[in-house]
Structure formats: structure tokens, C-alpha cells
Length: 277
Ligand SMILES: [Fe+2]
Ligand SMILES: [Fe+2]
Image (cartoon, rainbow, N blue to C red; front, side, top):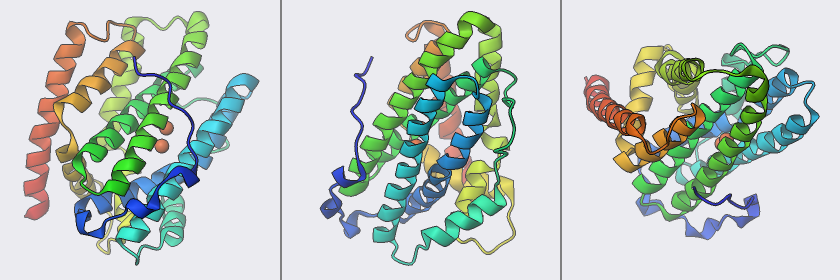
């Protein structure tokens, strides 16, 4: 397993690496979406703080996690401003929070239990870690490569953080394999039925047409899916198998890697056609 990464600061980014001739406008569009979602880590932090009200140890770590996510949003926004100086991050972020509010008052996990909440967080961190690794490998722009490598390392650290606490809750909750599988799969399947990503893409790119989830899911996903190589899915599925308590290198890992990679490749081509027409 990869070594735990060191924390990094905003000042550690070497902004002089930026090369405008290597910017891919399609990637700029998905990084704009990422900047508003990540920056919204403060509201997610509030939600998790409420859910884990009686767990001071985890609450402290949530604070640090939330600060990381906000930092990701700022770094991505600042990269976009270099690539597209017309990007008004502050206005786009405001519009995103207004259009996609998170219930920060709830005391109960929307996943049914604290263990299920932590397992779901593991899934989200697998997704983000894979995403930034895939974009790092897909882009030729050296500054974005550096930024994505640093963020991907943070996301892997976040996965390990939530997994560590999940194991603690698991002693009490005893979620069996099928329950874990159900929780994790429902997060995976939610992917394309949720407004978070398509709405962020829509709002961050100042789209003028009325919002349509299906259309913007396709527009966003066709760019993202085309960044993925089999190796990214392979690593993500190993973390997924570990989270559900099965061998990260066993037969299920191989089957899932094959099915997920094949599905993403087919969808990338199908969505690209749909968006063009
Ligand atoms: Fe993040
Ligand atoms: Fe994260």
C-alpha cells in the first residue's frame, strides 16, 4: 500500500510551471466544476460534524479534512484563472452553493448509520483520488500535473482516514459483506443520478441554457471518462474491495476492474456522440 503522504501547503505549489500552450480547454471545464465542489468542503464538514457530534476525535480530523478540501478548491480555482482569466470563481461558487445547498443542520447520517456514512466517505475519496490521478496523467500542462498529484495524494490520505474510523464503528455496527457492498454500490450507482457533478459543471462553466441533469451529466462525464486508463480503475477497485472487506487483489477486484473500465470506455464514446449532436 502507498505510504501516507505528507500534508502540503498552498505555498508549496510552483506556479511558475504554468504553460498556457499546454492547456486543454476540455480539461479546464472539468477543473472549473472541481473547484466549486471542493471549495464546498466547509458545508460538508459542518454536516459531518453534526453526524459525529459525540465523537471528538473524529470531529477534530474532520476539521482538518474540511480545510484540505477548501484548499483543493482554491488551488484549482487559481489554476483555472491562469488558464482562463475571465473565470470569476467567487461568483460561480456563490451560485453553486445557492443552487446545490447541503443540509448542514441534520444530526442523522443520510446513509443510515455512522459506519455507513464513513464507508460512503471512503467511496467518495476513492472517486476523487482516481479522478485527480487520471487528470494528472491525461494533461500535458505541468502545473496542473503537479496540482493533481498533490490533491490525489490528499484524497488517498482521506480514504485512509475514513477507513480507519469506519473500522472503529464496524466493531459496534458489524455491517456484513452484503450490507457493505450495498452501501458502497449505492454510492457508485448514485454517480449519474445525482446533481452534484453535472450542476457544478453547468454553473462553473456559466452555461446559459436551462439546467438539464442528463445533458450535463453526459457533457461532464464524457471528458472525465476519457481521462481514465485501466490502471486508474484497477487502483480504485483495490481500495473499493478493501473497504467492503474482501481481498483487494482477488477475483472480485479483477471482475470489477474489467466491468467498470469497459463501462466507462463505452460511455465516454456514447456521451461524446450525444454531446456533439
Ligand atoms: Fe478534495
Ligand atoms: Fe478528499
